[in-house]
Length: 397
Image 1 (cartoon, rainbow, N blue to C red):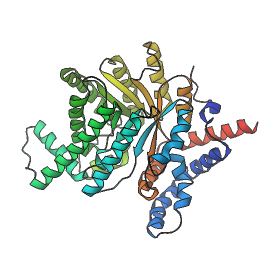
Image 2 (image 1 turned 180 degrees about the horizontal axis):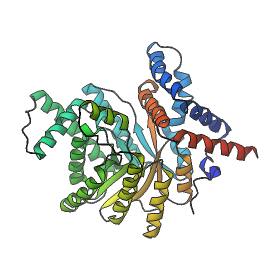
Image 3 (image 1 turned 120 degrees about the horizontal axis):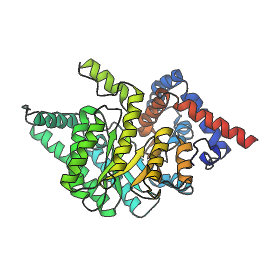
Image 4 (image 1 turned 30 degrees about the horizontal axis):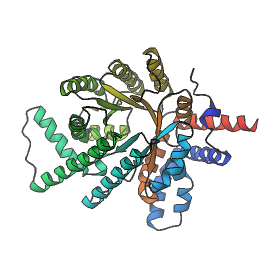
């Protein structure tokens, strides 16, 4: 029987210094006012070239990131592998807007795939479409797709827009082609609802091309959206018609406050579930559905929720699915929910950690968002802190 309260297993990769650093970080993150101030002052200090990069790299960066380059991630990769946990290299640079930056990001993503091809400690690769293309163009394409489905007229794209949209599709295709060539499973991350329609469509187009013989491309489905359970049902039918293996990375979601604010501002119904209980209910219902149709779906449960992790483990046990079956994975973020990751791995389940990397100043928006999310998710920080305190007491005893 798995116990997520076993801190000896959860923190056995951490020495005294690692544990103390995590304790101090989660204490800070647990104070919303400090996080709020840090979100303003830290980027400002970097812009002013104040000597704080070393401090960031040795604290929050070390907790949540693998390094500044792929090679620098080797220490984290080896540490995770020693306890049966795989790595998902995640190039976490955000906010780029130039075509040459998009091209550079594409090349780095392909490099993570190529590393995975020769390193079985890295079972997946991942990317965000906004990392390789303009956000406003994804919004335009999404609007066009929705208009077409409703048989509503939509304006034509300019020549430049068409060229830039095609460039995004070409980059996606090159990344997916590399994944197929090296047989590396690839997550395409979900983003805001108003651009997700394009991402969903392009992801399925890639599945048609590359998922005929094996599940290479995975779509990410955010269950804090109230329409996503119905979406999964419709995707099952599409997958059967197209004759493809359908990969799903199932998550709760990451843009709740932004989604609700935009819906209120533009006066349309919020796409977000009315409360956390509804999200939890749909997440577990989605696990039920996906496991019931495991002939079509491959699943990665991306979750820091103990109940959902335990629920999927119980579903697999009931269905007599080998925990080592590569069609079923659990995933968490580096530096978070080690009590879930390490205890699942110890029980024989397939687990991987997202290992973000990139230059410190360019990964900072990601790190600040992580801190913000930990502050806003009820109980997340206090749970992490409680487990660290319990382990420190156990070691002292």
